[in-house]
Image 1: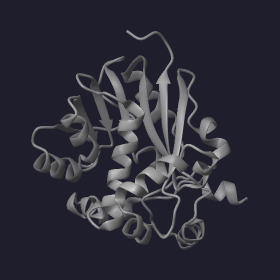
Image 2 (image 1 turned 180 degrees about the vertical axis):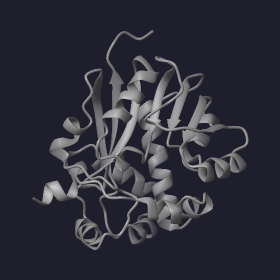
Image 3 (image 1 turned 135 degrees about the vertical axis):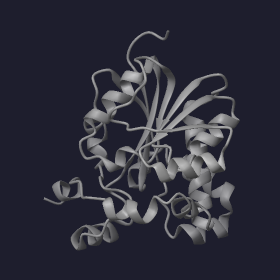
Amino acid sequence: MLQDKFEAEIPTERYYKEHCSGFTYHKRFLGIKGRYVNELEKRILINLIGDVKGKKILDVGCGTGRFTNILTRMGAKVTAIDPSPEMISYAKRQFKECRFEIGDIKNMRFPDDSFDVVVAMRVLIHFHDKKKALEEMVRVVKPGRMVVFDCANALRFDLPAKLIKRFLGIADVCTDFTFPHKIKQRHHHRKLKIRTIIGVKMLPPLSFLVRFLGQNRMILLELLLGKTPLKYLGSRCYILATKRGKVK
């Protein structure tokens, strides 16, 4: 079935050998489309978690520190981890005031109930079996506090291109795609309650529209449409969940 093939994980070693040099990954967010996606995702994250001043935040799979930097500038106490030494090295050079360390989402060193917010942007898309990653994220966040992550939507406008890549065995940044009706099922954890889903990046051709409408208007339009049923036609869904239990 199409659904089974689309939700099957494929190896991404080649992709990361080509894109984990730090700058190689970072420059993906330097062009018109890249700058737009970068600003859009930062805006989504801020809208989801609100005021972070003084809060302890864990940025899992931080990459080159895009989100770590903005959260630190907003007054949060951020710890950022990534399994790639090259990514961490680049992030440390770029954002000297931020705290980065090498770490694995499936085996984190932090005690239970350590953070007010756990952020994992562009992370769970790499795992078909998300159970261990979710288990660790839930373990380290405090009861009643937030966990933010995203998933790649299978019902996306670039579906044909993604299917061709799968057929040809071409490594891609996303290894796992989720159909909308399975988002809650595939990100289920007994201690986690999904509160909000926002779907964005649904309007091709993106670069043309950003030039035509302007970046801020385009972001506002996407955020507006992303809260309607049209969110399930976007390329990504961003999810806010909370850990069950009383806030400490």
